[in-house]
Length: 420
Image (cartoon, rainbow, N blue to C red; front, side, top):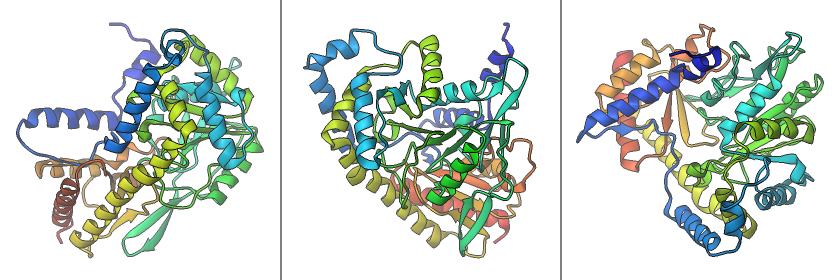
């Protein structure tokens, strides 16, 4: 079968995708065997959140709006009542003064990043190449295969701040970060999957200013940020400006199947993205947007984000951190990234005697599944930094009992690896 260069690139099995395939196959073969699965990125189905969406879906089905949202085509920028709800939300909280022309709604955030990365980076008509810059890595692995061209992504090693005996935090290494004419777009997530890191308000403002000097857009992925779904455990203010594209989705607010991704930015950025969408899929599904508009306008979605969603994952992380402290040998040089947000915990095993991939295989033998960290370094694929092989990502989307037992088994296996 013939595949073009683009087809081969899109079909390539990336590191994390390969691991996820292996995890799915392992669980499928398990039959009656129980695994302590700390790998899943799917948000938990929370009854209060599920019931909210059921209620608003029923409301839509019984209203005249259903015809417009389901039985007709729409505009390529999204469903206007939902876009207006988004504008109202951000204008109320942050006084951004945005309107319909500043927003596009895509079929999930992945598609939004596909538009952004291929519109603002890559080869020009005169052969000039503009790259995607991640100011620090590790970073969300979903960005890695969005570019249709090869070798378009670069990143920098972060600063590592040791905050306590077994805690650390990544920070942008501003002494090394370079935004020049070779950069087409800057991308980062805040809070970050996989680490839970939150780049501070001061740090993000500095990155925005550096990029603005070169007329480079800064894309900030706010999938876990306030006001919705607000799976964030530290102070942070979403940032906006002339060269900022603010992105968020409703996946972690209980709607991952609806595939709703939103970008907010200057009209000069939104228009090319709208053209991408019109050419590739006409527009994103409007049914989920219509339901979400009602929940946002009522204020219920924000309330349930704060009272239910955020609290659920905060309590999960507190349990995990307590279990790690009680069950990991303190003589092992392990460091947990400061838990500032997301569904995940990131652990660094300094000077790990084996690779994180080998640790993953050993843990599978103990019926425990994690995600090796080496696939979360977009832009540093060719960097032989040993740190990439010393980290694992754990998901807080399983039961309390499985989190506790899984972490106990990780502590046991890691202790054996270090000979402690």
